[in-house]
Image (cartoon, rainbow, N blue to C red; front, side, top):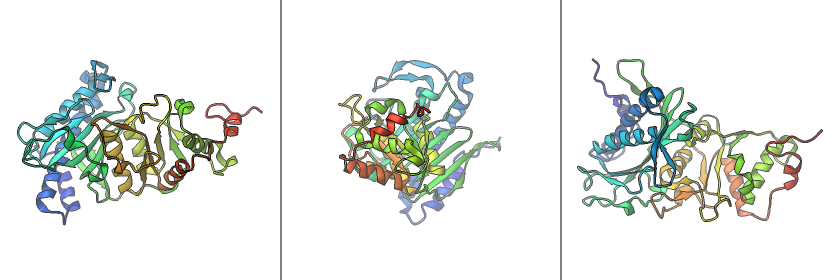
Length: 361
């Protein structure tokens, strides 16, 4: 039997990619990322079997956010936790599925990294067999010699050492940044043992785009800058943008961001007025910050409309924020609309051409 590690080629690629970095720090980062990658191979295996692995359906419990957990959510969470527990460089980790971080029994004081992750993004798509994924982030453990607590995770996104996601779709792909550009690895299952193979080493997001992704069912709750932007896109070549746009929505952030990585575009989950006390829907630490680092490393931009996502300092482990990210030119435009709120949406566009109703002949 071939006992090759599924991360041996990944480790070799990272060794080349991190050349010039402090050797001890590079080794620690490689081993931490390989621990994440090993867990994602297992998650991919279970996800691909679906109901055959008894991974579909509700788990019968809710997580800290009050959302019902799927069986695959908990399976993915357990697989990631087990892999991180075995990594000597991980002091603690925090998951979307748990209120508090978990400190490593063996390495809590001396581990150099904190890992934050969403074990399974896009859970609502599991039974529909639509792309889902895992999002992860690596932060420094700043006070080595002491076991970290929740406060140690409260770091702005620009302090991330690495971030990435694994997409479980027709192919299983890992998109990763170590702050030196964006790499893409494909999971190759053709041999006796699966291997992460480097497929792209300098991903760049197109600056210009004609595609945006937003949940249009929330239109009535959007703030005026978003109303304006979407109305102008929907107006197409007869509107002020003088070009047609396509709209997409998958309800899986991993899938939305990966589409942007491959062909450009904009993803919007903006602040709205539906629940005024909640400024956003996506979690800063496990979703927004890792994706923001990836997007910016690929030449895009990520904001909440008024501030750069990577500058936000979390108040709590599960803080939520608005998220607007993607092709730089479009994000610059949206930010300018937020900076000039007197330029309201042209409601006339929606009177004659809404998102769903075509003009009467």
